[in-house]
Length: 211
Image (cartoon, rainbow, N blue to C red; front, side):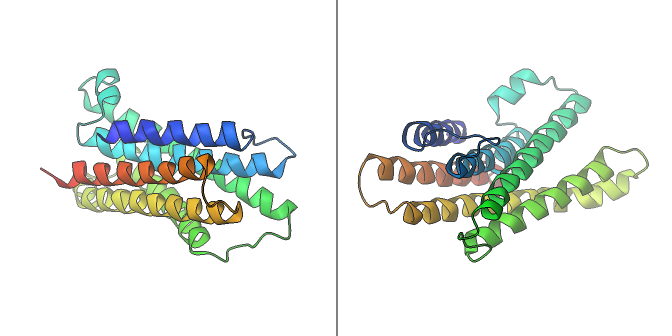
């Protein structure tokens, strides 16, 4: 179910951006397309990638299980790569929105709950990745140190994912009102995108907490 909701969120986001908002680009002079890139990158980075890490780590990500053999080394490699992709996409998403704010000084800056949660989530995600890389990838740390850190690493990974989903939901609400949407096909697509993201978050958390 989590993978179905992830696919639905991706499909709806791409339909909204391509059909209603004229696509996205990180190199465009069109600020609207740059803003669209922020939405896409943040969906694929801190939400989809982190969600896949959590699902795969608990043995539920079908694609990851097919692609990755049972050897611990390969599993750790995929875990690191998925998180690295998530961090990179998230940083690019921040670059996109900061570029839009810099070029359009009329836009509000860090005035909303969405901006606070979003920026804080990316800071936590980056620190989490750095600490995880140092303790679980670099040689030199003891098994006792890794064992003590592992529950906290898993806990904060789940917290970061929940914050990312909340940030996406508040971001969609913010964009909805900025666009002045009320009813119509675009409003429906945008609302259903938010619902799909929230349901993806719920099913990922459920898969993690259930035995």
